[in-house]
Amino acid sequence: MNIRHLEHFLAVVETGSFSRAAEKLHLTQSALSRSIQALEAEVNGKLLDRIGKRNELSPLGRHVVDRARRIVLDASDLKRGAELMRRSDAGAMRVGLGSGPGAILMTPLMCHFAQHHPRVHLRVVRGATELQLMQLRSRQLDALVVDMRAVPPDEDLSIEPVAEMAGGWIVRRDHPLRARRAVSLSDLRQYPVASIPLSAEVARQLVAQYGAMANPAQLVTVECEDIESLIDVVERTDAVLLTVLATARERIAAGALRILPVQPRMRATARFAYVTLAGRSEAPVMSILREFVARRMVE
Image (tube, rainbow, N blue to C red; front, side, top):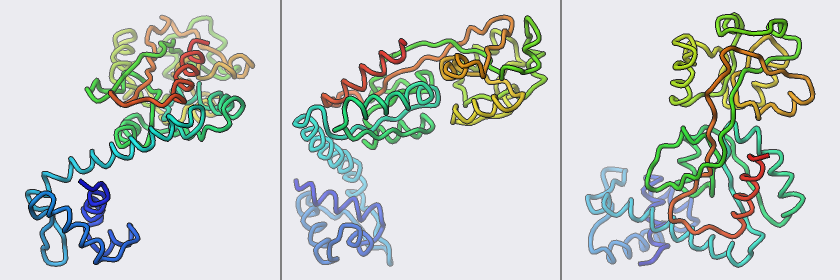
């Protein structure tokens, strides 16, 4: 079966129009029509029905379209994988980082590749885990480093635990609560609480330890996917940051931020994982990423 014919068929399905699909593919409409006809001859049936000015999938077309997408993606993956296998420490790498891993890994990762692997085209993407999983499945990303608890255990995913890190409460160095030797959650709630979106599992751990008033839905008043922006807010205001302590370690070491001694000490942790598509061949260059992530998280 001709892969190009499948790509042309999918373009018509996605645009809903022969004219728009032809423009997208840089083909004439007559050439595109011949390609679709050739595919229909191969499957021995009509794939598209003309309804007024619209093109809709026939029953056979609905059966074919999902498999066509998988075949086209697999063919693209095969071509790209072969190219990367030939080039070894070169080619392209597309990595998705969650909020916590992004704060810990992003700048060191880019520095490492710029200094030691300059021939690798590295693209780092930040965003919500749900969106990044969609990008991974559509082959827009090669690997993710994200909150493990935010990833459903699906059979098409390979989920490898990387690190478990302590959580805590962080404030600016001259925050009013710093004058206290021990801080309760009730004391803390007198100030704005900032956090990235938390998984349901972390929320349950907080409630189990501190009670219902620790439910992030009621506790958190400033929420953002970008942990670096939250750290900036906490450094400039009286807000309290609920986070993985490692995400702010440089500013803690510099003295700009301090860990708040909330009692009892938080037991909730963040569990980060390296996520790829199960059964997908990994290019040699990806081993560099895997080793870097494991080493940096341990450090």
